[in-house]
Image 1 (cartoon, helix red, strand yellow):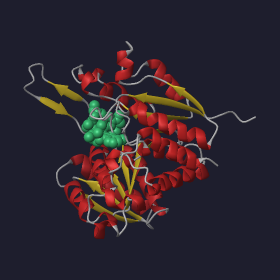
Image 2 (tube, rainbow, N blue to C red):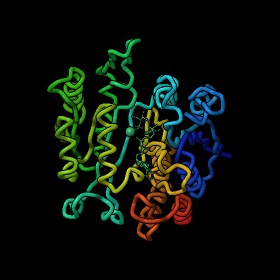
Image 3 (cartoon, protein in one colour):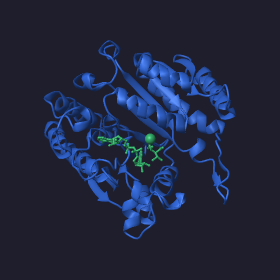
Image 4 (tube, rainbow, N blue to C red):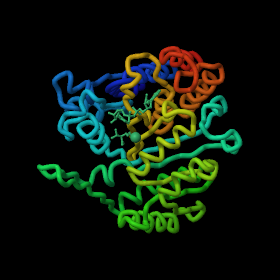
Length: 351
Ligand code: NAD
Ligand code: IPM
Ligand code: MN
C-alpha cells in the first residue's frame, strides 16, 4: 500500500490559522493526506518556545511538503528583531529548507475583473504574470547590524552567480510553458548585485534558453509598467526584496492580496507553500479573511511537490466556480465568511 503524503501544517499567527484551516479542508477534499500541525511564529513564542521551535523545523524537514499560514503581528514587534516571528521563524525556515525559488502567480480571474483597481480596458487585455522571486539570498540574508546607540545601521546585499543562475533557470523553464518571455528586474544602474544579476541571467539565457525572449528592466520602471499595462509581462524574474514588493503590487491588480498563493521550491521539488499575504492583524479573529490564496497555495503543492496536476486543477477550477457563484469575501467586495468560502471550494473540488 502506498504511504500517505505527509503535510506539515504551520498555521502561525493572526489570520494564518483561519485561512490555513480552509486550505487543509480543500486538500482533504481532493486527496488522502496526513496532516500534522506545528507551532510557528508568535504562536510558538506564546507557548513558551522560540519562534521556530526545533521540533517544528524537524517536522517540516521530515514532511513531504509544508503549508504555512502567516507569522508576526504587533504583539511580538517589541521583541529583539532576531527573536521576532519574521526574522526568528519565517526567514530561517525558508533558509533551512533551502527553498530558494518563490513562485507567485498573479492572474485576474474572470469573476474578479471588477475587483481590480485598474480600468476595465486594461484588465481586459489579460493579466497573467508569474513573479519568480529569489527567496534565500540578497538583502534579507546578507547580515544586519545596528550600532548600540542607534545612530547607524547596515544591511548587506549579497548574491553569488550560482544563486542567480539556479533561480534564473527556473524562470526560463517556466516561461517556456507560458508565453516565452522573461523580464528580469533589477537596479543595475546603481547596484553591484544587480550588475551580477543581469550578467548572469543574460549568460544563462544565451547558453541554455535562446528560445526564450529576455528583457531587462529597472525595478522602478517595472513598478510603473505593472499598473500601466500588466499584460506586457509574462514571467518577472527578480531578487528577494524587489520580488516581495512587486508581488504585493501585482496581487492588488489581481483583485486582492488575499488571492495570491505562492510556492517556495528547492531544486528537488520539495516545497513550502503559503499565501503571499501576512497575518492581517486588523481583521484577525473576525472570520472575514480571504482564504483563496491559502487554498490556491494547496493547489500549487499538488502541482509542484506531488505531481498531482489533476488535483491542482480541480482546486483552481473550484475556486473559479466559487468566485463566479458569488462567494466573495469582504476584500473582494462581498460579505462571505472565510469558512463559507472554504466550504464552497471544498464542495466543488471533490472528485
Ligand atoms: P498583511 O498582508 O498582513 O496585511 C496588509 C493588508 O491586507 C491588511 O489591511 C490586511 O487586512 C489585508 N489582507 C491581508 N491578507 C488578507 C486576506 N487573506 N484577506 C483579506 N484581507 C487581507 O501585511 P502587513 O499588515 O504589512 O503585516 C502584518 C503582519 O504580517 C506583520 O507582522 C508582517 O511582518 C507579517 N507578514 C507575514 C508574512 C508571512 O508570514 N509570510 C507576510 C507578510 C507580512
Ligand atoms: C512575504 C513577507 C515576508 C518577506 C516577511 C514577513 C519577512 O512579506 O512572505 O512576502 O518579506 O518575505
Ligand atoms: Mn511580502
